[in-house]
Amino acid sequence: MVLLGKGASYGIALGKALVIENESLKIEKENIEDIQLEKNKFLEGIKASKEQLAKVRDKALKELGEEKAAIFEAHLMILEDPEIVDQTIQKIESEKINAVYAFKEIANQFIMIFESMDNEYMKERAADIKDVSDRILRNILGETVIDLSMLEAEVILVANDLTPSDTATMDKEKVLGFLTNIGGKTSHTAIMARSLEIPAVVGLGNVTNQVENGDFIVFNGETGEVIIHPTEEEIKKYQDLKENYEKERKDLEKVKGQKSITLDGREVELVGNIGTPNDLEGLLKNDAEGVGLYRTEFIYMDRDSMPTEEEQFESYKKVLEGLAGKPVVIRTLDIGGDKKLPYLKIDEEMNPFLGYRAIRLCLDKQDIFKTQLRALLRASVYGNLKIMFPMISSLEELLAAKEILNEVKKDLENESIKYAENIEVGMMIEVPSAAIMSDLLAKHVDFFSIGTNDLIQYTTAVDRMNEKIHHLYSPLNPAVLRLIKMVIDNGHKENIWVGMCGEAAGDKKMIPILLGMGLDEFSMSASSIFPARKIIRSMKYEEAEKITHQVLSMGSAKEIENYLENTL
Ligand code: PEP
Ligand code: MG
Image (tube, rainbow, N blue to C red; front, side, top):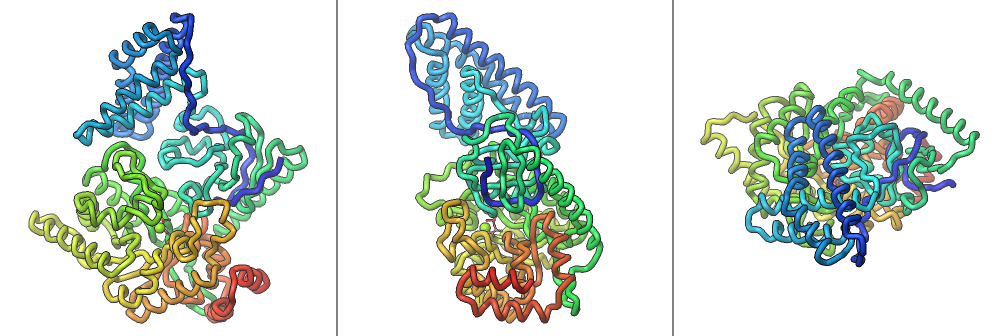
């Protein structure tokens, strides 16, 4: 069977599928005769859960440190709680109902009690109980519970979508690739896959139902082709493709250590996007000239409470030191949209991407924002920090964010805490209103970084996560290209540098156009850096300018794509 999705992270994968069921469980009440049998099922479920969690905790302790392991320790303690166990047993006995239903009812009661408490810490415990009870329910039902941190063999992960905590805890050595039902090239699963340099195809529609555990699969992370149960011939073809791909990667390494400069001498900066300090290794291996986007939200995501100032400081310091004086653009918290925090309750929204997110949330919950800014400023003495605000959609927002930054600087001065002088402050241009106002905004920042992932979706009203309309989502859309050109020109008129940290910056077709528009900095996934440098080194700036000029006169993405295919 051949499926076609969106190639989200380059590379060829061959291996056995591991299907992750993260759909919610359907549990119904049943009247039962054999009370002892149900009690046993329940106790077995608890026992299996304990054994699994103890293993995960031990592994976390060894590989991720005490803090992460503490989460699993807390989960183990919930399992030991006699109240939950006794009440479930009683319920099975008195109501003569099935174990799984009885336990679900009891667990829900506890979850509700914790959720309704006034104390934030207690509220957070509700999420833990949910997590543990889900594991117990699956164990009672005899479903396999998959801990991605404990994979036994090499696998291709097949899921509806992967959460940031899935990707953060999973055993990367064992994961050959990802396949997901939903998502596009700029969904966070796709971005994570690229920064981990793991091949991935997303937006496959219903792959979780088309594949079973253990099925042999081959796929191409560039073209999006996925073959389930390939023939001998197809396997051979994919083995060859894999070999070629690896050879090509080796060949690309020839540009390592070279400048990112055109044949006629225009030099640009090729920098990397990261989500956690763990991505540094890939970045340095791929010769990034700095960090153009550090998505700090991942510090907040893979956990069950707010990170402290100290924890954040350590992460920022690590990245700044790792880059040894090269520029590091750290973006302040960009939560909301498709990125949620389990411990920060935000009311359900009709349109989360147009909702309470990023800088809007930070200007409203200033304690969260100030904690982050303090950590950033304190870390600034360890390298070349630039601070960037996400999702700015008006001048007022920018000025308010800068004002708070100044307040935090004053606080630090009062406490005699040092921070670097002349830290550049910039903003993302990812909302059309900001692009349109960029002439005025440019007077108040040191740089712009264009976030095409969101700019495309907001400009063209095409949800970046929706695979049904993904054919409408393109950085080559002429309206998007015109906005990008306008932003670069407006930035340059005010003598500030303009970069791009959306995925378009690493897109082979976009690079000549962006180069010709005068983009100064290109920030991309680590694995895109060598290919990008190769393109830049193989052309003249003059040529790129001509391409840009032509493209800007065209009326559709299709026309532009055809033109580029014939020209490049
Ligand atoms: C963007 O929108 O282009 C961007 C870089 O931010 P994110 O993908 O994190 O929304
Ligand atoms: Mg964005």
